[in-house]
Length: 121
Image 1 (cartoon, rainbow, N blue to C red):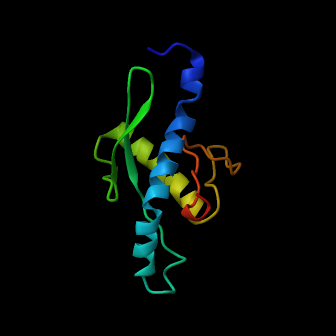
Image 2 (cartoon, one colour; image 1 turned 90 degrees about the horizontal axis):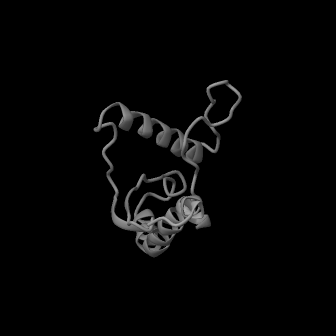
């Protein structure tokens, strides 16, 4: 069981570490796939991965699978909201700019934060 609030506070950093570890392990294969692209496209491409993570009773994250073709908007209104927020974050990384927030202040209104680009992982 979760013994303290620190378990919850540390949850997202542990999930982020899991994702980074997976991307590090896949880096050679991703790099090989990028190398097969035309040279002018190699610096202008991205791929969206879907990480399915389960939490055990101790809130330890376990990787179930990684999808390279995630389905978007399949699960109803809640899923659409999550997908919209995630895509806003994705485009913020790709275009190096945060979308306008609810107040038009340039602050992101989404729940996701950019992890890191593969080059800096």
